Image (tube, rainbow over all chains, first blue to last red; front, side, top):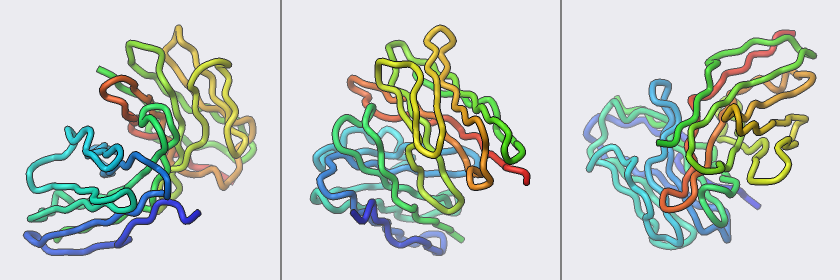
Length: 115
Length: 114
């Protein structure tokens, strides 16, 4: 199994530009999570989907952030416009079953730097 | 509100020494508890989890953890640390019901001295 796949692995962009992060969950998993990791705030859950439907987006910092899951094998996290404070590592994770009790499988992350 | 506290931000141990990483949680019901490890530049990987039953849980790489309800703790232990164990360790509590998600602690960074 290829595991959770994220692209790009690294992204450098300028303030104001649109950034799109992509995630392919493990085949057969029905829940997908987007996390953000920074030194200051640690690991934060941004949003999660179950069966392609957003369940909890309370962690999405503001309207500049949006996430979609058009099908079971693909999700995007978009930041528009990007700001320097968005610089972080963004992780995607997937799981089969209940989010609170099942093992989450993490991708390698996308390291975002906004100049 | 649910929360997880890892009181040690950074720990250094000598190779071959024993290790204990502390984790305390706040949750009204019986929690699901997890330990994840993150190596530099990598995503998180599950070490072990407690869902129910035996309060002493065995995991990968020789790690174990004990759930103590009376102390609201889930400390991670290893009898003999290897240099490859240097990483960041995260404790997490899984919430059920409507919230149904993982809440992570702030992590403990482990350094291993030769």
